[in-house]
Image 1 (cartoon, helix red, strand yellow):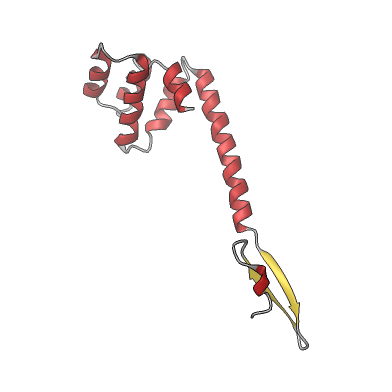
Image 2: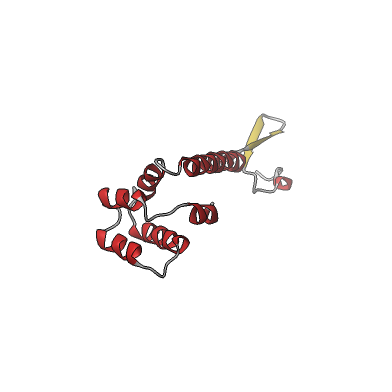
Length: 128
């Protein structure tokens, strides 16, 4: 995703204007990135992403996503697809990790049960 983003997005467009307007990036930083004649669009995009990551602003990538909608809707769609896939994968992993197993063991006086997490070895079921 990162490589496609860097290859496809020209950050010197209104994208940076939106980041300034929403106070995600300073005008000085954007001017430095735009003024650099030696930077390719890809290098400028990498620098912009680096600035956003280091900004520590939790709204940075939300604003970036909104800015991309105007000229880069296909990239927003790809981000959403990746996010949905990652969310689905996360839910699957959480479900698997929290699945519990109940092993019932009958004794002469009553039945008892023990809850095991997937990481526990089930060979110890007789130890209570």
